[in-house]
Length: 436
Ligand code: GDP
Ligand code: GDP
Image (cartoon, rainbow, N blue to C red; front, side, top):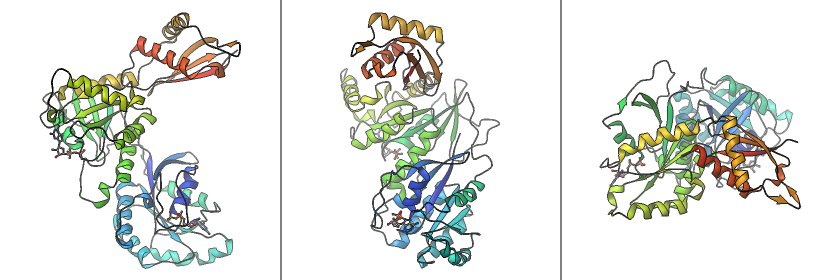
């Protein structure tokens, strides 16, 4: 299911990141008195009443040393491309500036729903000045104060009112949704093209679903798949598409809808810091992950090279020890046929359910082999375990006292569960809960 996306657009210093932080509910981006200060996070989940949506702070996409008007235009384009509803933020203490009018023109042409919010209206008497903002042509302007948290409820009511009917594009239970992430030029679009041209793959339509325009549908061996588009796969030549923040934003958006995420690594240039960061997002989101080493055709291979490269990949991606590594070349299609079967296996494992009695047999055998630890004379007692969720598989282990469940013992139990049930490709979660 896709969540609605809301983007905040506005000149530097009008209060975009202040509002973003308020709505996201954590102080995750840096607010300072310096215009255009770097922000850590520009895409995050927010909630209002019963709606959960994703919020973009377009001010966080650093577009470089462009003049203000150019930057504003690009931020507006990001919002138009990525959002379902746009919040156009103005500074109520400065009135409407020429740059605001320029942005208004672009937003108007886009036909996207736009809600005008007039910020820094810290006292009620300032609300008299709101009428000027009707002239922008987007209907009722909402007076707010980001720093005092005023007026945000009314603003959000208006925003949520514009969410598309089925903002949740239908997903089919038995269809596997996957995305490709990785730095620019790692070969994402090449790999998608090669997959679509593979002999046993049929590019298809899936009946009875509301479709997302940028998704690609395919079928192999009677299994339906959907490839979710990521930045860099559909290049349109816009300046902001090459910025790191924008590609992260697109990756997060794609990861969210995926069952399986393919993390691409370039065999030619090797592993970079950015690769780990990107892979980290997929891991944190609890998706199934496959590490794909692309451009394998550029490596002189002998019987040892693959093993050596694998060791290198493993040492860099310790947190992805469950992810299989697939070596291939999108260009020559060498080993390409191994990818879709790996996606299928990872997806099945991500959705796998283990019966409680079978699970408990494994846990009890594990405990018999490696007795539970004692902390200050108290021994951990494991009563029973049960699987509480899939995608990713999540287990609750009922114990006498959760504080006695040491990280290393939890890890031991996880390994035993993995040995017994083979959760290749998926993270699994274990929670210790108290039960007397
Ligand atoms: P951005 O560049 O649009 O993201 O703006 P920021 O969120 O960084 O805010 C710019 C400045 O305006 C900061 O000094 C904020 O503290 C201040 N600010 C934000 N919202 C309000 C508000 O509602 N009232 C007042 N008085 N100041 C605000
Ligand atoms: P993206 O930015 O991740 O979508 O990367 P592209 O698919 O545009 O590929 C970037 C460059 O790498 C292009 O010049 C491709 O031809 C090249 N490339 C992609 N896959 C391979 C591969 O398997 N082997 C080689 N040698 N080059 C590749």
